[in-house]
Image (cartoon, rainbow, N blue to C red):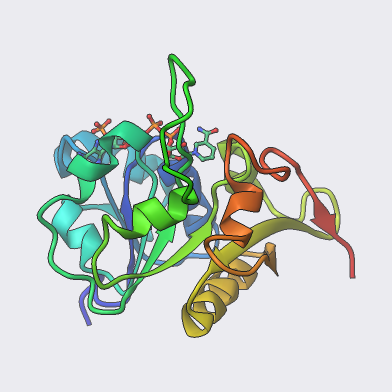
Length: 204
Ligand SMILES: NC(=O)c1ccc[n+]([C@@H]2O[C@H](COP(=O)([O-])OP(=O)(O)OC[C@H]3O[C@@H](n4cnc5c(N)ncnc54)[C@H](OP(=O)(O)O)[C@@H]3O)[C@@H](O)[C@H]2O)c1
C-alpha cells in the first residue's frame, strides 16, 4: 500500500489547510498537502507538522478519497480548474466567501457559499466543515478545555456527512450536523451566519 492510497488530500496549505494537517498529524492520519507553488515549497512545513503528512501536487491531493479545500475565495476557481471529475468522492469545503485585505463579501446570487463551491468540484459529494473556527483552534488539542471542541458539518449526502462525522470524531472533536448545504451551510458561513468564530465545547 502506498502512503497516498488511503491518505486525505488537502488543497491549500495556508492557515486552515496547515491547521487541518496538524489535526490529522496529531492522530497519525496520512495526508497529502498541496498549494499553488508545488511540493518543494512545502517540505519544511510538512516536516514541522509530522511524519504522517507529506507534500504533493494539487492533482495528487485531489485524487484522494477525501479532499479538503482551503483556498482564498477568489482563487478557488484556479485551484480547482482542470481537475478530473471527483466521481462521488468527498470534498470538504472549509472556505468562506470573503478575504483579506478588503473583506468584501463575495456576490453569491442568493446561494450559500458551499452551493457555489459545489459547482467548482464536479462529481463531488460536498460537506462543509472546518470553516467556522480560527485555525489555531483546529490545530490545537480538541480536549484542552475538557470535553470536546465542537465542529459543525453540513451537506446534502447523508453517507458523505457520516464519513466526515467519523473523521471529526477520530480527530477528537465533537461533530454537530446542521443539515443541508443550503440551510446548515449558511449557519457557519462567514460573513452572515451566527456560528463563525464561536468556540463551543461539548461535555457528555
Ligand atoms: N484564516 C482563517 O481564520 C479562516 C477561518 C475559517 C475559514 N477560512 C477559509 O479558509 C480558506 C483558506 O484561508 P487561509 O486563511 O488558510 O488562507 P491562506 O493562509 O492565504 O492560504 C491559502 C492557500 O491557498 C493556496 N492556493 C492559492 N491558490 C491556489 C491554487 N491555484 N492551487 C492550489 N493552492 C492554491 C495557497 O498556496 P500558495 O501560497 O502556494 O499560493 C495557500 O496555501 C479561505 O476560503 C478562508 O475564508 C479561513
